[in-house]
Image (cartoon, rainbow, N blue to C red):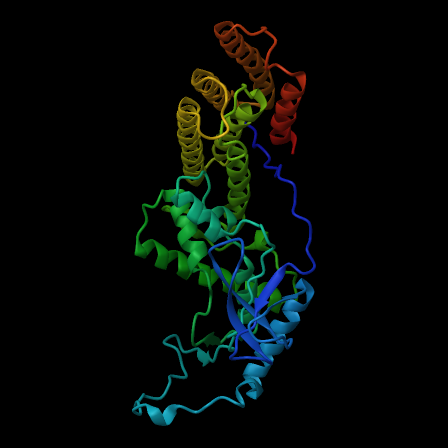
Length: 411
């Protein structure tokens, strides 16, 4: 049994010096704390700027300055200078009698007030997929999931804060923004079959994880997630952060490779639909190689992503056939052409999804055999439509598919 290596095949987006826009609101000419609606998504992202700009206009700030702005605004918040012009509205409300705050926790540790962190900047490159975008796409049937794009910045920030605690101290508030990460993780591995108790248990474990990471910082070490030993219970199975993130990376590559080609055309594409099948096979092989119950759940999640891919292809293919029938759209071939192409493409995907992954040698041998089977599928199509037998068999397509499989075997 070998463990496939996930390598992203998507071209990286270029670094954009001014890719982050900030909308300046009338409430703040000097210090802008706003919610800006990203042009390319339906998500709302919190942005902050201390650079003056005309009210109501959009301006851009460089990514290098974002951290400086965040630090500056939070320092001003803590020393009171940011709120020096705030209007006191306390006389407009009925006074509320509250008991004094506890200063000692149940376990005897001293309670420490959390540092205020009102201004928090989430930094994403334009066009980059976010967990929210993936979640929305998954709800519409797309082969993806929010867990595959959840970030870990919240862990780094929380670890820095918890790293300031003494051995006999605890924070008054938990202050770990792990809700999305926890819920997405549980949802991905259980197909939505988890409870609030599962969430609470995992969040308690995340608190322990943050304390462990905080000790790394406190000891002067470079933060290293792979060293964390705290167990996280996902789908009733104990795992580590490192294993969870490795599965996330592999799942993201599988998902992106599955959605590489969703529609169909008027010719068979062995390389594209062979890739869809191989992505499933290698994702399943990875899960099996993990040698754990969570690995089995990962393989099941890969199956769900693959099934979604096939469903979308069938849906889009049916639409193509119908548009070819009524003359709408850009489809000018006979409807049966599109139907037969889709049937052949899906046969190729299904065939490669059953690739023998018991070893690298077995995978290579079975791959060669399946290429010949793919040729047979193409030959049958060509005979039906009176086309030359070598149609749709470009050597370049086979080379691309072979390179794709080898990337899983060797990285």
